[in-house]
Image (cartoon, rainbow, N blue to C red; front, side, top):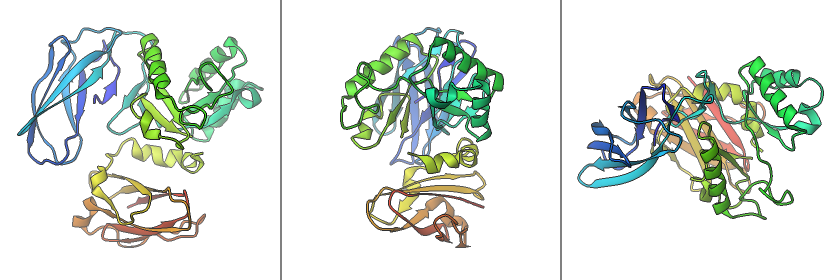
Amino acid sequence: MFRTQPYLSTDSFGSLLVSVTNTTSCVVVKASLDDGTEIIVEARIDVEENVVEVPFSLAKIVPKLKAYDVKISFYDTLVHVTSSKLYHLPAGPRAVKIDRLYGGIFTSTNETIFPIGPYVDVGGWLAKGDIRANLQTLKDLNYNIINPDPPYPNISFIHQMFQAADMIGGIYIQYSFRHDYTDTQKADEPDGEQWTNVSDVFEAHEAIKSVDPYHPTSLVLNCQHSAAFYADSVDILSTDQITVLSKKIKELSNYMLTTPKLPPSHIIISSNLDIHAGGWISENKNTLLLIVVNSNKGPITNFSITIKDLLPFGLLHGVGEIDSEKESHVFIENGIFESNLKERELETRSTE
């Protein structure tokens, strides 16, 4: 996939992210547009289960509103072919780009947004009193993106809301189409019990992109029914009751959006239970962020997680800090983390 999109007529270069697993050999990558234009003639990369960024020139690509279909070929002992879409747009509205290497969103001023923020009650709070003051309150709580919850009072309010955000700076609006497209009595997440038709989501995505290719589309799921079914339907896939994570937004976002994420194969979870973990480690290997989520139903779950990248360095000895809210310890020895979580709990650790 391409790291940041859309590319604009004012951009000179783009980059393709390549991730090839189960091989340590040298791989040759080629990429061409649907009209035959070669954008990556031949790039040789060494892949060891990590993402490699391959730059390319945008000089040969004529800007247009519709996305180009791109054919990507990988040459090893065999030839593997895949495809992607490339947006190279004329100069126009202020574009918003997704960083598909570190996550997050780039704004038109190159500010990085962590794409997790609160629903905000428009009629019950935001529209009452001073809109600018209310948005400033949210920014002071370390949020830099919010999702105002419709219905909106009128079109004038929408203009005032965006103008207030511009005046404040550093807080952005995710415009929401709440509920079903035609029936407000139906579920507002497509994987809810009353609505599980993914075709409508794809159609909505294509309709929005045809009108506005300068901004990403997002979808919120309640994660109860076939969430993976919708993974390719939009640019940003979100989830609904992440209260614990959102409270740590400032602490986590500065780290997660500037530090490479470890490949899943580098994080070994001992338990066969439903434990999920993500890790971010600095290049000098002296700082690590580990997020662990317990999706099990039932009593406390003990887990042991091994970070392969830390084992050769003999790092992280002793007992980790005490979590005052859960009164639990994280035991750390030679890159192995041991602790426990209650049902559906989340735990974060930042260790130096």
